[in-house]
Image (cartoon, rainbow, N blue to C red; front, top):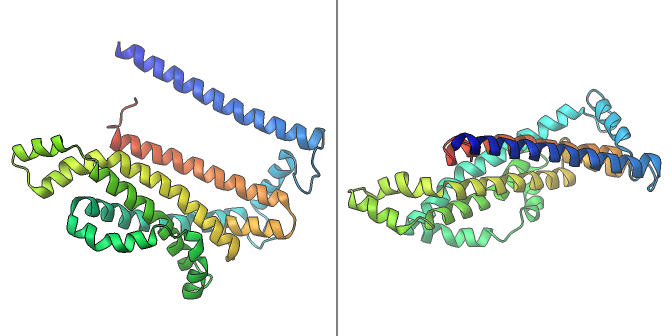
Length: 268
């Protein structure tokens, strides 16, 4: 019976992968027909996928017209995004857990959290530029603010949603308050914590691109900004597609980690 379920799951996964590949191929075909064949839009506003691919290959080794190659922009964006994201996760997750479990911590932190929570991270860009200038610190702090909020919110919600009956059972067996936190509440909150980390990942990239569009000297957002100023839509699309590819890779890695810790390392 288990073998049949595993085989069915593998078939469904393979079917999904085939459909995903076909959908991308259909999208590229429609894009090519609309631009290169029927010319529904001028090439300077919407280039064909062939031109975008050629620009991508050229930017792998060419610094023109923005002063850096595509790998350099990629590394610059990834470095800043990961720095701010990890900082926000390391601070946000434990703080959210502490707020959800300890009432004293919740009373102390909540007023400040409620004040910062509704502020869009993009609104902090002028402040970051004034304080840190156009530097990696400004972008990292901005990404930190965009990451720490969802991490705190979801970690707090996950702890607060711990079933009371599980706590009662652990108390019956003589578990202390800290033992209940680490052996009952925290493991049960992992799905919500990982959901917060996933949301934070998307928020961090949006904040990074916004910061690089407004004030930066490198990065994929800077590449997109240069493409806009030069009316090079092919550069803009290359930058956008690179952001999408980075997100796909990071999501795949994130899914593997989540499966390992939340689902016990087994396929559903």
